[in-house]
Amino acid sequence: MDIQQLYQIYQQHPVITTDSRDCPQGSIFFALKGESFDGNKFAASAIEKGCAYAVIDNAEYQKDDRFILVDDVLQTFKDLAREHRRQFNIPVIGITGTNGKTTTKELIASVLSEKYNTLFTQGNFNNDVGVPKTLFRLNEQHEIAVVEMGASHPGDIKTLVETVEPTCGLITNVGKAHLQGFGSFEGVKRTKGELYDYLKAHDALVFINGNNEHLLQMAQSRDICRAIEYGTQEDCQVNGSIISCAPFLKFQWNSNVDGINVQQEIQTHLIGSYNIDNMLAAIAIGLHFGVSPEQIHHALSNYIPTNNRSQMEETGKNHLVVDAYNANPSSMKAALDNFHMMEVSPKMAILGDMRELGEASAEEHQKAVDLMQEYGFENIWLVGDEFGNTQCNYRKFKDVEEVKAAIIAEDIKGFNILIKGSNSTKLWQLPPLL
Image (tube, rainbow, N blue to C red; front, side, top):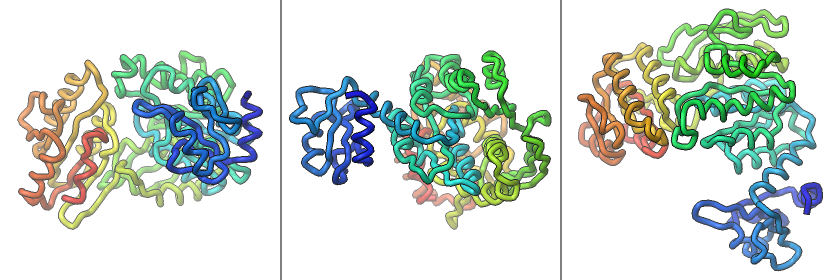
């Protein structure tokens, strides 16, 4: 069965499920595989529970014509999502990057939603299953879409952009993350650069972070001409500067995009000087798509972060900066730089291991500790084996459970506390205790 035939079936049954425990009546079940499961085994159960069809790639489980046999269920899932995306002649903004892509996506969606019915990636559904699910949510009411794409191996972005087919896009930044999968920092740049490759090949507009030398070099090497630059450099078409981080970011921005000359100040609800890049990206895209400066101001000044990203929490005992969703060398440095800039006292930090760094792990954790010492941080708690092996006099904990016990025993009060670590260190469990 080709994709056009399958799409005709989808049009009659426009509900997709990949979970055999959730089978709405008349839906289509895609029997995806994982490291510990084979969806083919659950196809019959999905049909029994109400699915009209099940897409499988193992003939052993094909019982009748309700079981659609294909070569590769995941590839078919992506191909069908692309076919659905092609039914909509709307701008589609593709976003990737090492850090900040989810926050940037949220900010862009907030700005665009001031003027348009905007589809955007929910949470961090940015992989080869989450991206198609986002595209399947497209409907005739949507006027514009913002799709986040993540990567942990070479070729991941190429696969996703060929599914999404963005009409414009941006890379937030490139840094040392998932080095086990990419092999090197050059591997990171090549993979993220696959978005630039696609946009260049289709003569599509690129929004470039002018603060990032790596991105500028990547764009220049591809001879990208259709571009709008944003950043803190004055020669960027959308440029800005930080006014304060006390503790929330306040900044001013200027623009001459499409002949629109604007100067504006925005007080945000975001922690982190590094978020100025994310804000300026949203401004640049908003202006390009005709969102007024007043609408941009309303969207960005009212945006409140969620999902443990740059959140400020007041617990009654302490002020917390919670950035415990993920951590890699570049995001850890950005968090420490910002914590150093924050005009608050006294300070404390609870920092968890940065995962998936491969052979670079020991060196990168030591660099982070050296930066803490350079900044004169004193009250630092380090969590995990990697930080545990660093050379320093900071307090060290094996895991989050040891930290919890210490917090309870010592009744921590009156601090401004930065909490940051890879999601698997589970430091997001700490705020209720602090």
